[in-house]
Length: 252
Ligand code: FPP
Image 1: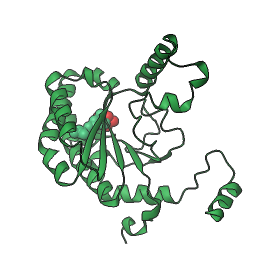
Image 2 (image 1 turned 45 degrees about the horizontal axis):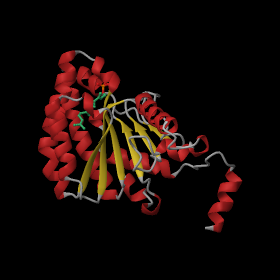
Image 3 (image 1 turned 90 degrees about the vertical axis):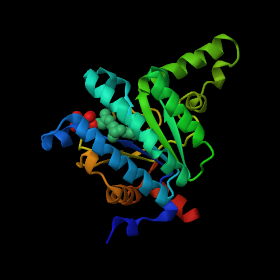
């Protein structure tokens, strides 16, 4: 029996975020270059996006390149950027055919101009698609995201556009790259590492975290289904007691 059959479609997470990890180790195990792992990681990206859209998940955010990743060897960074460009070019039609909207979060200004231009064009070309939002985190750092939000809010305060009392959680959320998205209910990380790696630190406050030992290039639809079944077995208490949650469910 597939895990898919065990999924309760009425209790799907609206937003799933993924830390795609283990490409390098996957390639090394096969005696290949790290870039071979990244290339095969694209197959997992396609499978995961397809499965998420088929299920009816509204937002899928993939951590594709962190600001820290700029410090990798130049050849690997170049290979990743070329792969990104190639993937956008090859997948844009599939995204449109499947009514999927492409979005990006991160310091996009740090990307090479030709990649940024292509990315922004793809974002524009898919802007009317409504089935699922596929969000790529590129040159992304959660610390930087929060820092730029703090600076914007401080500027509003300095210019007397807001009062101290108006600075609340909602206002901070409204200044993050993710201001238009719900927070992820589920974070998946592959390759068995128990880290968040500077990813969506504010937004993951109440997310369920699912770690699989699978390396990203081995991640397939069935693995996403398994993660969602696992998520649906959890009790999300948001700081309350089990008894309070059960009572809430009864009232519903
Ligand atoms: C982590 O594995 C993966 C990355 C840093 C890049 C992820 C990129 C892809 C899956 C391909 C391109 C994506 C898109 C959206 C086109 P790692 O290199 O850190 O692996 P390791 O931990 O085994 O070294």
